[in-house]
Length: 265
Image (cartoon, rainbow, N blue to C red):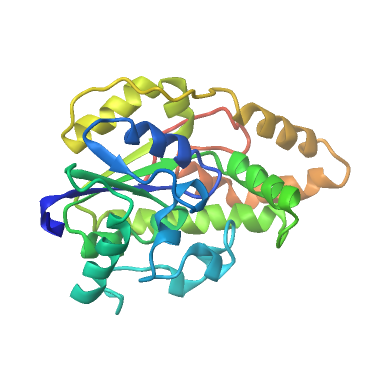
């Protein structure tokens, strides 16, 4: 089967945003083929190809979005027929080409949607947003656990804003995009997964993934505790003053972490 015979599903969302469980849930559908059992961390497609640089080239989690060259659009010199064939060939080693829907997930997809659409016009983008406090603390925890290139909370938090603002600007150029909040997804996973299946033109299907609904709570508790700290309190209140308005545009709040609102373009 040729490239044009398929529909391509790209899951987008920063590291620690819940995209892995979303990816596995979509992969459950019998008409979808997604990477499985590869040597790539979380079966991420960015590590299974040689056309464009993975996020690690730009500092990895909490950093790649700060590099303008990591943001790829349809204007990238990487967009070519030769690279399209090469990317399809490299990913096809891990897809079942007997299926129409082919699924891929990688964190930097969030700032590469326009590039991916140019490479695969029959593309659908599913974007997972998660509260920036949860993403930032979870990313910081990951760095501490593995003791690699540790970076501070504020820098990771700023990275969340930069990447999502880039996506918000890019979204108007996309033909097919679906945005879901992690918090809403984990509260009603079956509802949201089937809404995504409908968006893709697929029938309902029962997912088998175990999905936890209260993971954010631990990170909100850390934030609230630090707000009352002698040293951390003033710094966190400064973060609120500087970033609350920008965070609110994505339906989140630093003053009330449990609040969920609409995304405001």
